[in-house]
Length: 563
Image (cartoon, rainbow, N blue to C red; front, side):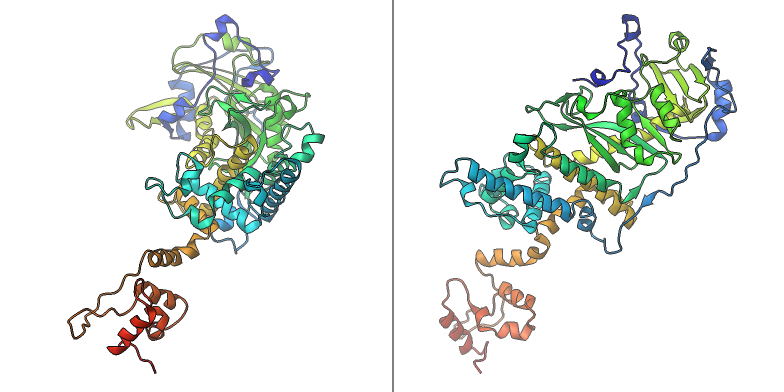
C-alpha cells in the first residue's frame, strides 16, 4: 500500500504532468552544506537569480517587505526537564523510559501468557514450558540486556550464543542466563493478555497498544523541543502476515510496519503513531494532515515551525497550522488541491524561480534545479542564500532560503533512523509485536536516552557513540560490571591454578611453590590483608596436589606457620 492511497487530497497526475512531477528528495542536502548569509538574501533575490511572479485572483506577487507573513514569536525555553540530580549513569537515563511501569507490565503479561498456555494448550512432559517458573523484574532486565548484546554481537542463530563451537564460543550469554530459559522467555514475551483479547477485541494493535501508549507518553516528559520539529514516517522491517502491512519503495526496509514520528533537529523523538490502516485517523480530514495535527498538538501555539515532506504538505494543512500560531515548511506535490495553475504551467530555465503568495501569507515556490522543485512555506520570503558544496568546498551556488532551511531540518528523523540501525537486535523469527517492541525499546527509547545523556554530560566527542552507550548499558543490565573481575578469577581457577614465580628452592634445588595467585586475589577481594591471605591454609590447595601433603610440604620449609 502506498502513501497516496489513504490521502483524499492527492490527485493523480496526467500524462503531461507526470513527466515533470515534483517530488523533491533530500539528494541536494546530502551533497551540499548550507551557509546562511542574511546580508546577501535580498541582493540575490532581486539581482542574481531570475524570479517570476504571476498575479492571480487569490494568489498574488509576494511583497518585498513580507507584510502578509504572520509573525509568531518563539516563546518557549527548549532543553531538558524533569530529570533529577540522581540520574547520572547511562542506565539511569534509559530507566527514565524503561521504568518500573514498563518492566512490571512485561513481567505480568509474560507470566500470564505462560500460565494460560500451560492450561489451555497441550504441553508435553518434556516441554520447556512444563518447567516454567515465573520471571521477575531482575530476570526481565537481564533478558533485555541480552537482547541489546545480541545486537552488538551478531551471530547466525540465537542458539549460537550458547554454542561451544570454537567459532561462536563466548562466556557472556551462559554467565547471564541458560539458553533454554532465554528461548522460553522470548517465546512468552508479551505485552497484553493475548487469550483474553483474542476473544473480545477487534483492535489490530491490541497486543501492544497499552505498551505503545505508556512509552510514547514518556518521550515528551524529559525534553522541550526547539523552534523546528519534523514529521515523517519510518519503517519497522516485517514480512509476515498482518493486515496493516505497508510498502514504501523509497525506504531501506520496503515492507513492514509504518510509524509516524515527530522529532527535533538532534533526532530526539517526542511522539509516534503506529499506522494500522484507515482506522489510524478519523474521516473528518485526510490522513496526512490529521497525522501532523495529532503529533504536533501539544507543541502548537508557541511560534514553532513544522517541517514535512510532500506526503503531508498542503495549503489546507498550512491554514490549519496558522490558526494555531505555527508555521509550516515543506516540499509539495504538484497535484495538490488549491495550487495556482499559472505557477505550475510556467516554463523555467535552470536557476529560475516562480513565486506566488496568498493573503494568508502562504508562499508557493517553484525552483528549477536539476529538475523542478515545488515547496511551500508560511514563514519565508523569496530570498536566496549562498550554498557551499560538501564535495567541492570551492564551489558556491545560490539556493532559495526556503529550500536551504528545509534541507537543514528535514534530516532529523533520518538521523534518528540511522542511529537506530546500528547494532539492531531485531531478527526475522520474531513476531510482529515483538519486533515493534524492540524498535520502541532499543531504537527510539534508547536513542532518546543517549541524546539526554550526551546533553547532560556535555559530550561532544565523536568517540562516544551510540554503540559505546549500548555497551555500557549491557554490562550493567546483565550484571557483568560486578562479575567482570570475579568471573575472570573463577574462570582461571577452574581451568587450573597458576603459581607465582619463586626464588626459594629446597635441598634438591627444586623451586618451592608458594601460593595460588588467583586464590590470593580472591581473599584480598573479601577484605583480608596480604598477610592474612598468605597464611590461610585453604589458599594453599592446588589442583592435583592433596591438601594435607601440600600443607605439610610448605610447613617443612618454613613457608607457613602452624602456630
